[in-house]
Length: 257
Image (cartoon, rainbow, N blue to C red; front, side, top):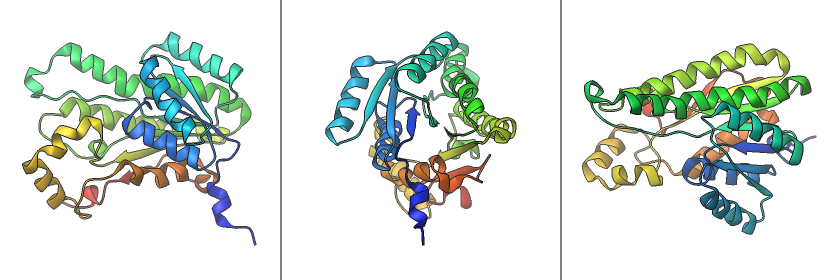
């Protein structure tokens, strides 16, 4: 009898993870590498990117670094062409690059709005399109877009971010509809509140942490390693008939009022 675990094996697959020099993106890259994939890290800061790649190589992973701006169509198209020519076909794409800007909506700067939308939404479209154009002739591929509990829920002071992550959720569904016929599965991974460099201030805020832990059925912050199993599932043959789905890894936050 063939072990079902073989369906989760990513050996021989190549995965590009955007925004992966730190935080959630780095954890997902490490997790996919642990499942057997060759991983391509991406960020704009080449020095920080190389540090991350070196760390994973020291852990035994097969890692490449690709520094490019995911908000520039020209840069994305050139980078994807170069990756496919020099490294090989991209089997898995994780659209993780993102940013946050906080502030009252009535005082939110227009420039900050456009910057946030370019980073959180445009990048998913641009990288997703460039990779899908190459996956379609091959008749296979996995795309995982990083959504958020803010794809479903709002919080004071983050309306633009909520709008961007709601857009990513619906773009994920649209990609699945258009590309599913070509053997491509496109799904979303929706983290709840996780301990990362970007949330350190919130983690250290006793009042916020008390509120969050009380609000979360699992009664804790998420650790980035909690996302790995879901990412491997959505990147592997185990999810071959899962398409257009958003998998929330949030300790139950979206299940409760």
